[in-house]
Image (cartoon, rainbow, N blue to C red):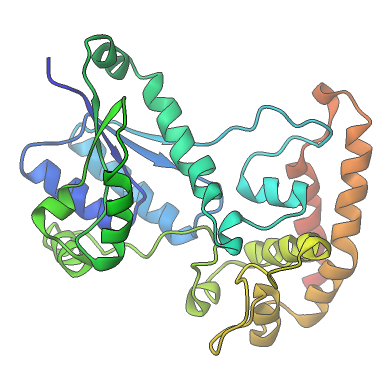
Length: 301
């Protein structure tokens, strides 16, 4: 029995080139998984929608998975990474030099889906491993990540890195995508990720800019070692995305001030009221966010 294969697809350059070439050489994955944090850039969601059509036309199964929080303790239910940050008054782990947000919101839901996937279960029952295609390219940067991953003996997965076998760096990956007649995707990341560049933040929609200001304001009382989502200031940008948003006029300064002055306290009070209710009747964080955005849209008008 041939071992089933799964491709981890982040809608970025490397994973797109890998998918395109695997299909071209007659080795399409049996399953393609995309983990959605709920906070990807709008252009990433648009590219993913296009690629879903591309995969469907070639008979490739594609599933979007999300990490689902099941235990809310004393807090209102939330749906995604941004909700977790706002509820707990913290920044993503990458702002502190760690990567647990990626492990929790990307790797974990993909692995959970595969473990419930019938072909994977059959393979494991037969003593096989599931082939997992991972898009580390032949660049020096990805070489460091590959060196770490390759040293791990995974009992369930045969992790394979086709781009490294082919010797493809990022430029080669971009060329392969163009040769397929597809546009080259933008770098994928959460809109509030440390990896966001200033030019990328300039393109973020206003509702996400408000969330960024709120995330930093909500977390501010607990910050000791970092300034904000960008960790610390450099020659090209401040440590706080809020300061950049204000300096660039991406949101009106008065709106930024209102969010910082009132929204964190209002959110905490909402959480306290919700905590007093049985879990099945608690209002969700999304209901508060709907009011938050509606208020600021009204004030802006």
